[in-house]
Structure formats: C-alpha cells, structure tokens
Length: 191
Ligand SMILES: C[S@@+](CC[C@H](N)C(=O)[O-])C[C@H]1O[C@@H](n2cnc3c(N)ncnc32)[C@H](O)[C@@H]1O
Image (cartoon, rainbow, N blue to C red):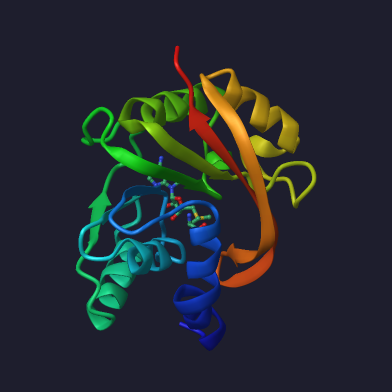
C-alpha cells in the first residue's frame, strides 16, 4: 500500500470517521469494504470493545484487509465474504453505524432499496446510516448512478424511512487515493 493511504488509514481517515460519528466501543458494518480504507480507521477508533463487520464479495480484497489487520494488531475486524447478497446475518437493532461508501452505484434501484431496508433492520434505534454516494451526475457518473444526482440518492434513502442529518465533506479515500468528496449521514426514523 502506498504511503499516502497508510497515512489516511492512520490519521486523516480516523479524524474523518470520528467526525461522522464513529466512537469507541461501537459496532460498525462496512458493506463493500474492499481493502479496508474505511474499515481500518474505523477499527482504530472503536477499540477492543467494538467490532467492524467488513463485508465484501471479493475474497482477494478481504485477504488484503486481513493481512493489514494482523500487521497492525487490530483484532476487532471480522471479514465476511459473501456472494453479493444484500441480507446479512447481523441481528436486528445491533449496529451503531452502517457504512455504504462508494458501493450503492453497483446496485439497481430495487437492490438499493433492499440495502436501505437491511440497514434499517440492523441499526440500533439511534444508529447512523452513513453514505458516500460517489459517481452521481456531479462526480464522474457511472453504473447505476449514471443518471442520478446527489439529491435523487438522498431522496430515495429518506423514502426508505431515514432522516437526513448532516453532510460531511473533505479529502477522503476513493479507490487507492484521496479525492474531494461528501458523505451523507442519516438517522433511523420511526416507521
Ligand atoms: C469501489 S469499492 C469501495 C470500497 C470501500 N467501500 C471504499 O470506499 O474504499 C466497492 C466494493 O464493494 C464491493 N461490492 C459491491 N457490491 C457488493 C455486494 N452486493 N456485496 C458485497 N460487496 C459488494 C466490491 O466488491 C468492491 O470491493
């Protein structure tokens, strides 16, 4: 891994994830975690009392994440290799923060709605759904976000029962570099 990303995972990423609300002792789901550019800083924040469920359908990416975790003596990351299914094995109301970072654009609307429902099911009542909707019309549009703007994505998440809370912008991780991007935080409402 390049030095810039090591520094991100050790310093700036930690600061950014603290800003979006990750705290010591929490349970986090990083859905579509790849090599862990968010899972690693999250694990540093939550400490030994917390856990990061790092889910991906690419075993090779999870292997890389696991190797990093071993090297850094981080014992609070549980990697989960799936075949791409939306449903997780996590219990109802058990997770503090769900991260959908740079992953929603892989999914058609119907699947995205299932992802929001799954996040709603597993999040604690005061839990946070944090979304990095990369690749909308404003930001190198591709795949299922080719024709959607940021507001469209925000609206579909609100339509799934979440309340928009805050937008956090900065130089954040994308693929294996940093770019200017914004993350949207939502709270689980009552439906
Ligand atoms: C562009 S990467 C983003 C990685 C990470 N979230 C980040 O922001 O650095 C998207 C990742 O999501 C994974 N992915 C996409 N759809 C998935 C699904 N349905 N289930 C599990 N992983 C998925 C891909 O395999 C890939 O590793």
